[in-house]
Amino acid sequence: MSEMNPNSETARDFDVVLFGATGFTGRQTVAYFARHAPAEVRWAIAGRDAARLDDVARAWGDPPRIVCDSHDADACVDLARRARVVLTTVGPYAVHGQALVEACIATNTHYVDITGETAWVRDLVDRFHEAAASSGTRIVPCCGFDSVPSDLGTLIAVEHLRAAHDTGCTRVRAFHRGRGGINGGTIASFLAMQESGDAARMRDPILLNPPGMRDPGRPEAEPDPMLPHWEPDIRGFSAPFIMGPINTRVVRRSAALEESWQRPYGSGFRYQEYWKGSGMLGLAETMGMAWSQATFPLLAGFGPLRGLLKRMLPAAGSGPSEATMDNGFFRCELIADGADGQRIRVTLADRGDPGNRATVKMLCESALAMALQGDMLPGAPTRGGILTPATAFGQVLRARLENAGMEISIDDPWKPE
Image 1 (cartoon, rainbow, N blue to C red):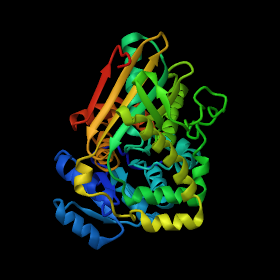
Image 2: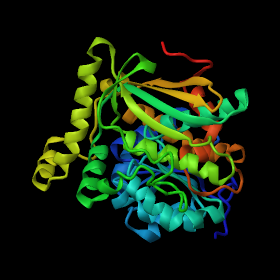
Image 3: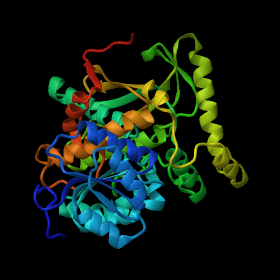
Image 4: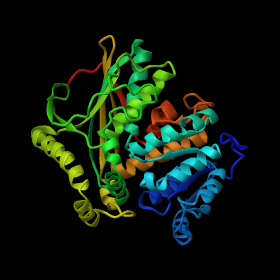
């Protein structure tokens, strides 16, 4: 597939190239690498505007720059050839991501992004999974808040049940809480999905399952929750979680891939996730959450209103204030049921806006895991394909995130509070 091996430290100019470095999230990845990347990591920044790249570089230690437009296929190949790992924050990915993924597969270069566009990921699976798998190239979408806590947390639960109790996992339910802002890139991706019709495709609960494992009669093919309800296991109300239609598809792909590799999560494994209401106001909070999630896609799906939303909501390249991002948080509690009746809880939590601060940490540590610990990753050195965070990074990412300050804990046994 390529004359260069991305696992070789000397074959490429850089270990990691940060593409989209001048955008709102991209600038945060540059800051993260400048502050946290080990000195031996060779990294560069990339984007389409040389002057803006120079501005970013001067602010963060003057890293090397690569000028590249996401729609220039030749430039994308040239960029990919110079990197062992490409990290990209340039979305909407269905609009701006295709050429770079193709370039990474053609040059056997590993890849990470933060897309939540599962319809686009489905297209990647159909077009490129086999080629990436045959060359051992790891193409890993969804490496931000969607969907690392859900996907990695489920894997941690499954592997703990397997190791501590010698049993499979039959069900995981994730309950989320958090606070933060939203950036213009996320809004642009959401509106682009509504405009293209991809939002309708995303309603398929097993959208990302491999071919041959997409039977709607499979146990995991349960529909997304729609209404708030009282949940005895959390002693409170829960509601549909806005990221659930993304995260559940990613977790189900992980489970299906592991099953295809003869390491099933458990017989009849199912996964679902929710927003966790808070205290006495939990019912009102969850009702409001369910109502907003039902109505906003309807508004965005109507052309004239979609144009109004574009004018009212944050534009691409903008985002929340530093104070909002610093004062945010997320907490993801995953209740896992073992096949023999065991019940455990895995918790992932961190300070910082989940869609920005936490997402940047997860994305950058994912890239560093491939750049620095490739021989320790699950299935190394041969595993490749359109993978998920869990199947690409496994416990290596857990350790990196814990070292970076994220709380990850296991309660075993666990009973409702």
